[in-house]
Image (cartoon, rainbow, N blue to C red; front, side, top):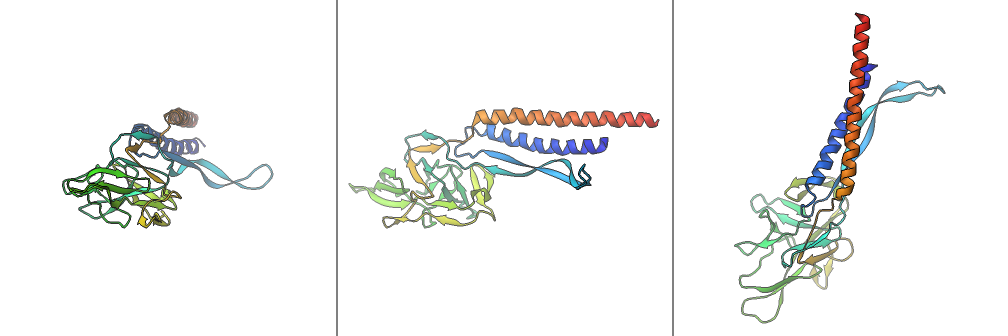
Length: 266
């Protein structure tokens, strides 16, 4: 009996240790660009059947477990920067970026983009930003008055020209199940096996770019802040810590009972 109690409490300790880690990670990323907060989904553990007062058997509970961790993909707060290459998505879409070495494609909500020495639009990790045709985006040397409209279309005045011209469109990708995305660190996600349908947004006025339907619109001169609610996370931290301590107390109580039994045998 005492041993069962201790193992049940141990399962609870493992569960709330994970929950505390998730909350701590959320708090640590409260100022991370494009970060999506995570929540823990709990489930109960059962073992063999036990009898009840009405004679109908039921399963005996033996603690709790973590069923999974779910991300909240709601858009974070808007942070104005005034830089044309800082862009955020107001909607469900993701920017696509490609590692120039491995050619691996990942997805991000962090639109902190810049033009590298080769004229390619890249993210802060050096990954190349992909356009709506899944190609790289090149900004010709000497281009001025660069801007990005709500559909992700980049325009600018080329060297020697006097009027703005269309350059390319920043690609925006949607997933029917964004929780199938796998965190890779550095604000990047990889498409896992459960992302469902992956799609580039529909063409707009003859140019492929983000629509206002599901992918959302693109806002230039701003970045998406973290969507972590610090107040809610602090409340969760207090609750999970109390639950962890309660399970620790159950182990102490089980140990006391076990010691009592041992002493009686002696």
